[in-house]
Image (cartoon, rainbow, N blue to C red; front, side, top):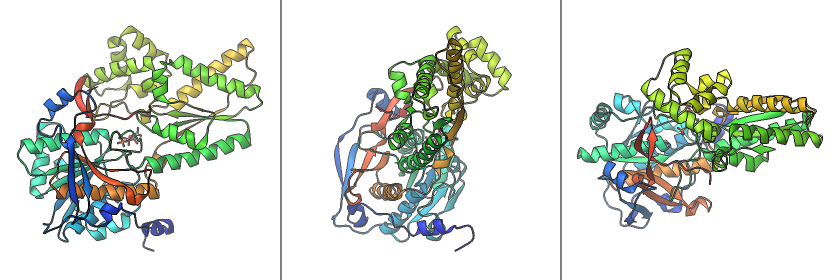
Length: 499
Ligand code: FBP
């Protein structure tokens, strides 16, 4: 065992991911079949205007058994973008192995620290020896990640210069919806510039919200929800054993509540809020608090002063009055980012509409401050920094106190608050994620070897046996729609919410 490698890591490294049969037969004889033209999730005309070259491309399928033929070495760059997700290292291992399957002299370069590594030209060559220790491991530490957006003309030109300097045939962007939007922008830009360089996206995010049509799942979701599920299961057991605590557990999932739903189905807590359901039923914060407090009261009446409540981290954005407030704050912060908490608060009080200003003032101080923090580079509220579980626990305690004063409740709330997020994002990938991510790396290379650009690598039929998983190339523009970001309408890959 070498320094820094635990026996568990060493054992996990020995696992050999299983490939779909079509890919296991090798890269050489893969043939591509094009389907009919595609459109977009919504706003097709606007998306076509933004992406005149790549819009409408066909879905691609692969089959093995073609004649093969002479292949040239490929030079590929890869970047990990956004939040960590179990399986990222296996995508890279899959790309490397597939590239070597195309031609032994193919080369792979990893951009360091996320998309910034492309426009600043920070990279390292990823050789077999370098990649080996990372096989089947969690984390993105092989090359790091980041949340920079590639959008300005200078950044686009700098990306072009880096790729030309390295003489790349292709760039693979492993990321979530925002990062794959970046991939679509780069693919279009390189074509406009008449540069022969493929850009391929790979669906990554523990949030599980990058899916739709032929893209059935993002890698990382399976592992992360299993890790959180185990922790929640332990807490459920502890709650029952101790018989005196209520646990409020916030779970990652910036917008969609897939992780919370999956964990709820696995562990059966006493209550799980689903953001999308809150929005559909237009529940206010007051109603959410009342319903939660009512569950606590009814369990108390049944002799059970304990329980577990799951809260998706994006819940706050689904509550109607909070949504309006956040939209107004986003527009405000896009104009005036930075400044200390007091300045931000004063600005908000002056410029928000009266109802939103009142909502903001009704929130506990820590939540108010967290809502006023700067947005990420894509304009998103950083919901992992907002203590929604504390907000709910505090408001429920207030409500129960009021009910006790009226004589309709005779207990008290002893609450614990938890946030499960970072615990699950870098776990060693489950066998599913290890196989899926490794296969996605192969699909990316299959698309590159056939000169395709502006595609997302995908595998479908994921609930069936591994051997039957079907590799496909999905046009990135077919996954897009127009949304308001930083106060203006822009084309983005649509998030898949819980239905
Ligand atoms: P991606 O969408 O980039 O995959 O990230 C998802 C996520 O893990 C969210 O669940 C969470 O809200 C966010 O990242 C946290 O961001 P950060 O890594 O910047 O703390």
